Image (cartoon, rainbow, N blue to C red; front, side, top):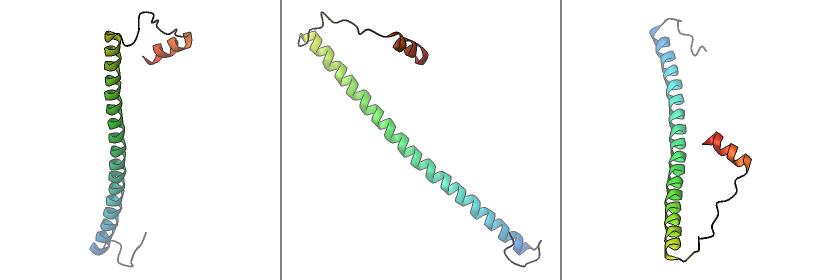
Length: 95
C-alpha cells in the first residue's frame, strides 16, 4: 500500500508506515480487550447465578431435613427412585 510518492526508504515514509502498523495493532488490541471485557461480564453473570442456585438449594435442603426431623413430612416409606440402565451408564460416564 503506497500512501504518498515519497522515496521508498525515506525517514518520513518509514515513520508513516510505522504509524499505520501501530494504529492497526492498537485497533486489534482494543477489539480484543472489548470482547474480553464483554465475555468476563457474561462469566460473572453465570457465576453469580450459580452461587444463587447453590444458596437456594442449600436452603431447600435445610428445610426438607427440618421438616423430616419435626415430622411435618413422613419419610418412613420412602424408597429411592428406580434408576434405568441408561441413566446409570450416563452417570458412570460423566461422573
